[in-house]
Image 1 (spheres, rainbow, N blue to C red):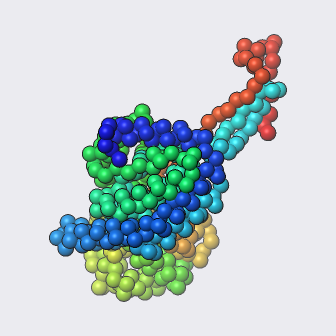
Image 2: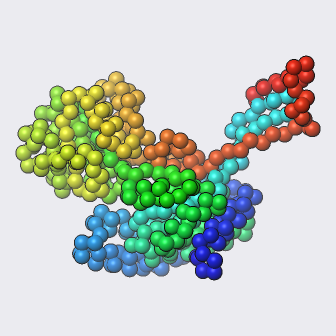
Image 3: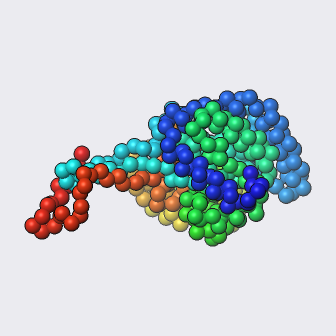
Length: 435
C-alpha cells in the first residue's frame, strides 16, 4: 500500500477518501458493506490458507519460546471466526447511520436556527496485535460511520490480514460512491512510526494490544490516542453470593477465552463468606486447568493453590492463571479493585441488591457488572456491531467503542442575513428557544 510516496501519501489518500465519504448516503455505505460480505465469502479458501501459513509459523515460534501460547490462540481465523465477522457486518448494516443526525436544535432568534449534527471523525489509524478478525470488525465500523481507516496488524498475522483486506477492498467496489482508499493496510513497524508523524492527515489513533504497544504509541505522536493499556478485570464474590452463580460467573470470566482483555485476572472473596464460597470456586478453576495463585488465607482454605507474589494483583496474565485474594469486606474489595485494576471491567456476584448498587456506584471502571461474567464486555455482545476498540479513557468514548465512539459533531447555523451587530442593549434579544 505504500509504494510510490510513502506513508504520507497513504495518509493523504485516506484523507481524500474521507472527504469523498462525506457525500455518501447510508445506502451507499451499506452497499459497500454487503459487497464486503460477498467478497469475504468468495475468498474464503484464500483467507483460510493464509491463516494456516500464519499459524504454522506461529507454532514454530511457540516451540522456540519466542511466542506465548496466549498470543498464538488469538491468531486463529477459521470458519467459525469467518462466520462471526460476517454476522458482525450484518449487524453493522442493520444499525442506523450514526452520521448526519440532528442531535439538538435551538432557535437563537426568529429565522436564526442552530443545530448540532453528528459527523464522522475523519481518518482513523488502528494498530493491533494478532486477532486478524479485527481487520473486518474495525473496517466495517469505520465505513458505516463514514471514516477512512489505515490499519496495521501484527506481523504474526500478516498473511491473514493481507488476504482479509484484499477481500474488503474488493467488496468496496459494490458501491461506486465509496473510494477504495477508504480502507488501507500497512505491513511494517517502520510504516507505523511514519504514520505517527502524520498528525495533519490522521485524526485519531486506536492501539489494540499490550500495554507496551499502547504506551509506545501514546509517547510517540501528537495525534489523539484512544485505548487501554491493560485488562486487569476482577470478579468479587460477595459474602451473600449464590454459590451456583459464583461458579458460573467466575469460571466463565476466567476460562471462556483467557487470552483477551475482558477475561478476569483476579478473584476476590469476602472473608465472612470465604469458607463457604472460596474452596468450591477455586477448585472449579483448578479443575479447568487454571493455575491459582492465592493469598495466605486462600491457601489455608485450598492448600493446593500456589503462593501469590505482591505483583500478582497488578498482573494481566492473558492465560489460565488467576490471582485469588480474601478481603475484609465490600470496602476492601472496592479499594483493591480501584487500586490494582485497569478500569476496564469488574463484576460482583451477590444476592444483596444494595451491595450490587454500592459496587456499581463506587467502582471506577468502564464496565461494572452484577452477577454476570466480565466476558460480556464486548461491542458485538452489547449490540454495537462488534467494536473498534476498548477505551478506559473518560473523555470522548469509554468501554467497548462502537459506532457512537467514532463520530463527533458540528454546529450548523442557518439564518437570513443575520448579523451579530444587530444584538445588544437597545437592540434585538436572543430567544434561545429549544426545539
